[in-house]
Amino acid sequence: MGLLQQARRAREAPDLEGLGFVIVNETLNLLPYRQAALWSAAGLGAVTAVSGLPQVDPNAPYLQWLNRLCRALASSPGITPLDAGSAPADSQAEWADWLPPHALWLPLKARQGELEGGLLLARDQAFNEHERALLAELAGSYGHALAAFRPREHVLSRLQSLLKPGRTQRRALLGLLLVSLVPVRLSVLAPAEVSPREPFLVRAPLDGIIGRFHVQPDQAVEAGSPLFDLDTAALQTRRAVARRAHDTALEEYRQSAQLAVTDDKGRLKMGQVRGELEQRALELEYLSQQLERVQVKAERAGVAVFGDVNDWQGKAVTVGEKVLLLANPGQVELLARMPAAEQIQLQVGQTVSFYPDASPTEAYEARIVRMSYSAEPTDQGVLAYRVRAEFVAGQPLPRLGLRGTARLSGRWVPFAYYALRRPIAALRQWVGW
Image (cartoon, rainbow, N blue to C red; front, side):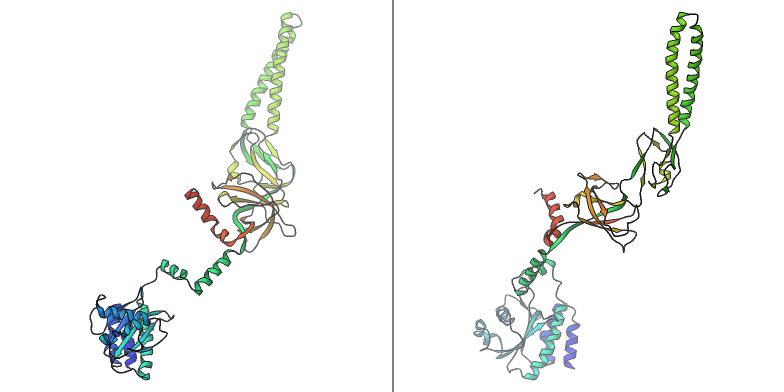
């Protein structure tokens, strides 16, 4: 019962100083002794509590001698009985001045086996086997109580302890070295999408405003089907003006032809009017042809690829401006945009893995066919290289326009290079090395 009460008193100690008082003074409730000293292994090791003293003076000769004795006993594997003859050599001469004839050293260890400190008990009679067994159980409780008050070890201290010379440290460093030399594939993740291969580009045939779209995005169309119309109001007005100018020139030509029969000046004027009439006729014919081109039709079958109808209706376009693409769903390729900041060396024919966002359980394999020479800004304002790859035969083709992530794989490199590549690049940019 006394052992359990003493263990509870140790657990209920409010702080490290109170725990030291319980250990060196209240252990007397279990067995008799004349002197007790508590040595802490924290730091360089020092005696922190002595029985009968409210405070310890580290400069006192008694405390200095106890510190030397406890440091020497710290390497003892277990409970060690002592006397003047078996004490460490540098403590034997002064033993009789400071301690009774017999003493017992109790290592106080935590649950993991780390030495938290030690308890030195001294008295006139030697400790018997029953007392040693009782103190061994009590030492375990004291060790756990000391570990509870141990401050958390700083990260740098833990790193320092790991790097201290020793068999465990050498094995850890050897293992780390072996792991750093393991070859891995240098890779980078890049946004990608399924784009058409060799699409037909539909451009604006002339300057104007798009008035109406006849197709919707991703709609299949046949050859000759109307795609979109340009607004004809401006052209209709210009053709009406040109037609009136042509009619006026034609009337002038008739009048000059009648005068040319009887008047030489009339024949001269008829030649001038004829030239003006031909010019007006050409203008009228040109505008009539332009009106015939305001409706753009599909020159081949395919799927209409563009953003949104509302983005184009009412928009002014110039001649030759791209409006949409006509793509074949059976002819698609993978377009990946590798960020310039994460550029790796790629070769034509290397494998690319594509992971669609809409189907996280699916993956497609493709092979690189070409890469852009220079980086271009993307819609998000990021400089990236265009990487095009064709899908490997024997697998179902993904849907046109599918977006996802592509894993671009490069050469084999040691794991250390793979892990430190970006930090080293950032350090070089910051240091300028």
